[in-house]
Image 1 (cartoon, rainbow, N blue to C red):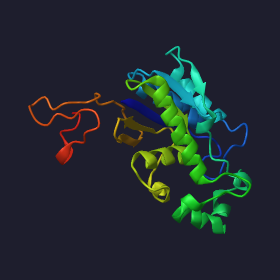
Image 2 (image 1 turned 90 degrees about the vertical axis):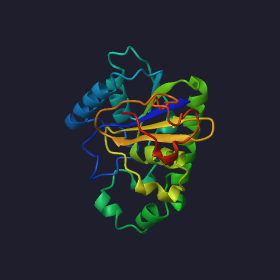
Image 3 (image 1 turned 180 degrees about the horizontal axis):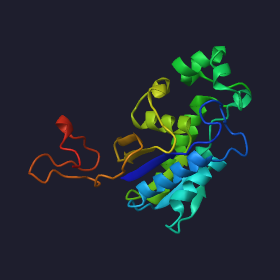
Length: 229
C-alpha cells in the first residue's frame, strides 16, 4: 500500500489575485518561505522514500525545505506541473471571473479547455498517471511526497475518491497544506485533506487492538472504525 503525501507549494506574491500558471520566475515570497519551513517541521517525523516536485520554482523551493536535513534528492516530474492556462496566464482573477469560460471551469470543469492552453481533463489524466507510475516504481510499502499545485492536487484527490472531475471544485488545497492518500490493491483511501496542522500517519493495515473489527489492506471500516487515537 503506497502512501502519497500531496503538498501544495507556499504562497507567492501572485497567489490569490493573479493566475500565475506556468509563468517563469514565480517564487515563494516571505510568507511562502515561512510556510515551507513550517511544513518541513510538521513532516519531520515522517520517513519519506522519495520527494517529487513539479518543475516550477515555487514547488521546487517548497520541496527543498522538506528535503533539507534529510539529505534527500528532489525528483522533478513534469507531469505534476501546473495546468497550462494559456492566454489566462498572468491575468487577474477578478478579470477572469467575467469570462464565459469561468462558469464552465466552475460548473463543468471536465469540459474546460483554456485558450491556447490545456484541458483540465488532461491535467487530471497526466497527474494520475504520474501517481500510478510512482506507486509502481517505489513499491507498495513506500511513503512519498509530491509537491504540486492546487488544481493538480484537487484532480488527484477527485480521482482517488471516485468523483467525476466536475466535482473537483468542491475540494480545497490551501497553500502549504498536506493531503494524504493511501493506495491499496482495490481502492485508495483519503486519510487527510488540506491539513495545515500536525501531521501523523495511521499504520498501514491498522487493527482494532480491543478485539473489534480488524481492518487490513483494501477493507473499509464498517461503521466508521475507531480512528487512530
